[in-house]
Image (cartoon, rainbow, N blue to C red):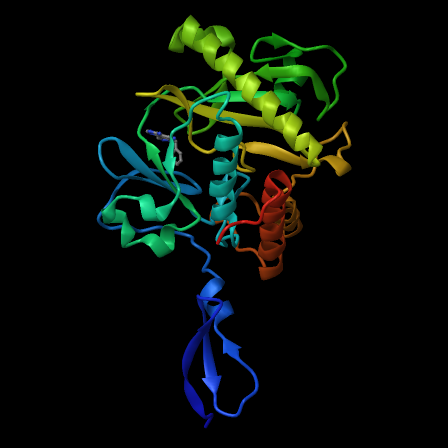
Length: 331
Ligand code: PZK
């Protein structure tokens, strides 16, 4: 039997155990700081406002919502059985970074991400919420996905091959897959009944949202993308395209949802950029490679990932955060 003589603390909050005559300190750092992967949230006294593949939104009161990013990951349209450590924190903290970076261009829906400043009713969940949640202002959402593309990829590449244009925008002939566009384009989309996004023309957007609002959203989206993509390029990350969501609050038009994260954008490592084919994804490449290797038929249920694939993917998300912000992820 070890001669256990109690607990202490080092560095204010790292608990330690001491054993008499044992020169080593046993600290519980790993047990206490390696946080569990969060696949589901459950706050029984809060009403679920919306639930996505990765994030859950709860209603706090009439004016405020609570965004919680889990560690879920989707690939080929399905949520996988394995979570990615730290992913929810990366998504949340990257959005916070961009909201701040863009505040001179556009207002946003964030109230605070400091759990201590959340309403008393949420304090009970502080451990689950820390680092991965955000209190936001409830907005009247614009029912259009504001997509900006600086490079031709995904559905835009498909459309271009068929018609030479994307969302009604004529593009130069002879473009190759993943080419940089002469200038960023605004390619709005709507959530179709299928749940899939459907590209629409700017004329269609005007029919739905009005001319003045549509022009404002288009111009704002292009400005936001340009400012962010130029910044990211200096840090070795190509933001090939991204999706913004806007809403109306007492502050007027605000940038909402998540912003310029790997889940709402295509991030490509600049040093591996090779136009003429589909690019490697900064964050999900190991996941895609693994799913291709095991020849998953892309029908549910989605498979689990080996520990190593989940771990290496986690490191990619954290690396994207570090590269873009120059800071470490907060616990
Ligand atoms: C809102 N979504 C999309 C995102 C989901 C669904 N500020 C706001 N006020 C009211 N509603 C929304 C927002 C925002 N942002 C956004 N749906 C509603 C969405 C993440 C997970 F399930």
